[in-house]
Amino acid sequence: MRYVNGTVSWTTQQQERRMEATFSSVDRAQAQEQATEGYKSRPGALIWFFRKSRDRWKNKYQDLKVSVMQLKNRVADLTKSREQWRLKAERAQDQVVVLQAENDSLRAQVATLAAEKKRPR
Image (cartoon, rainbow, N blue to C red; front, side, top):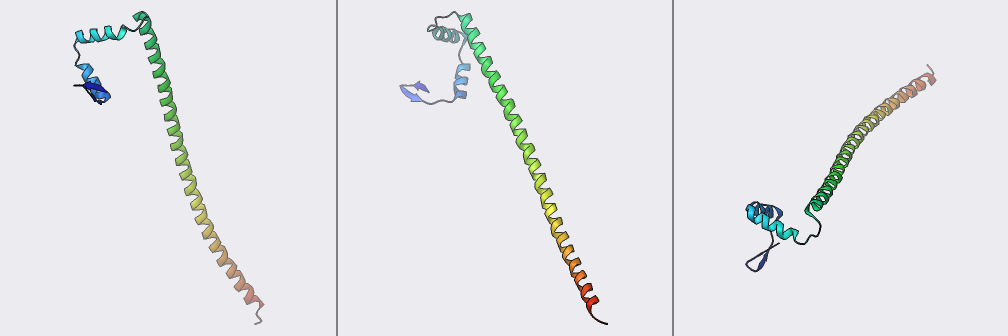
């Protein structure tokens, strides 16, 4: 959010970065002085603290990124495995249907042969 001509104007972070990039070195020095006026700690300590804080934040989110990738890979592996098992079960079911039909036809042949044997000649 920025104040332009007495009105509030919303800006994006990218626009803010572009505007910051247009500061001259004098403007940056003045901005830095104004920014550090409120701090009572020495700049070296602040730099150390902020750098350490940034490094912890980066490490935390790099670790999270790794765990997200591991979980995505696991989901992909499980999805692939389930698909393979589903196809295997469908093939087994098809084979059961074929074998049942073959079994029924063989039982019918046995029944006809038994009926022929019982008939007197």
